[in-house]
Image (cartoon, rainbow, N blue to C red; front, side):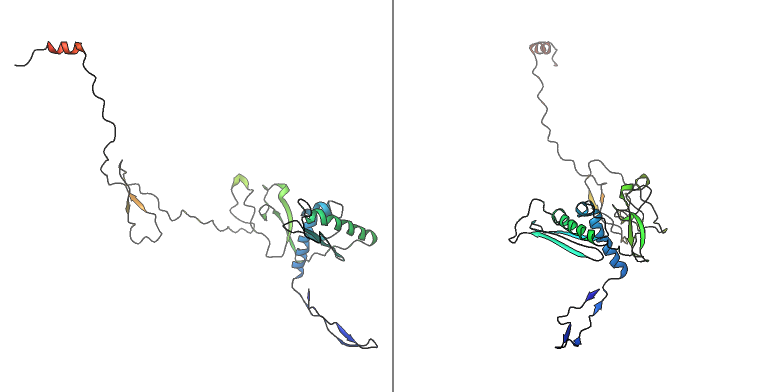
Length: 272
């Protein structure tokens, strides 16, 4: 509920008779289901979040929620926690801002002080009640790594029961942990999920009746008319190009003839 802030609540005379009194105006900003889910999320901070070791791990198991806080420079840390009948906050820092310590965090410094205070309070008074769950809230077992419904192939340490307002619960089974590594084709309601965008569906298959000549250079060829599927550029490799002259070094000269070759050639008869 949101309450309109009032500077003057009522006016009384000298005999303490109420002459005028303002009626508080309350406005509902969250439904019962939304409020309960917010409380449950704050309870997760204590049960398995940033304050789990300092609150739940320290033995404080009463129904409670809270939130840690730490500034980026580590000069302020706090923890605000509450039960159904008590709210308390702890802040730590210096009057002149300076770094408290290395790796200063609200869950490490402020939350332990809050736990000691609340533990002492409830040693002297009855334990607080838990927040009743609305009857419309539903539960689903999900894989926390995907937020989707669990399958028999999901690791057991990733399975958790979560609460949902009807209509907001997941309907698709886990697409990460499936048999054979392939996702299920249907969700739990028998509906086929939307296919992923196919970036290759518009590329036509390459032609099979074109012979590629060795040494040919690619020449762009226009696409056929009437094709509105944005076909890729087709390269015509059927046109041959003139081969470039070879740059190989000239062959070495023949070896010189020996004296024996000269004598043998002199003995040959000469043509007349």
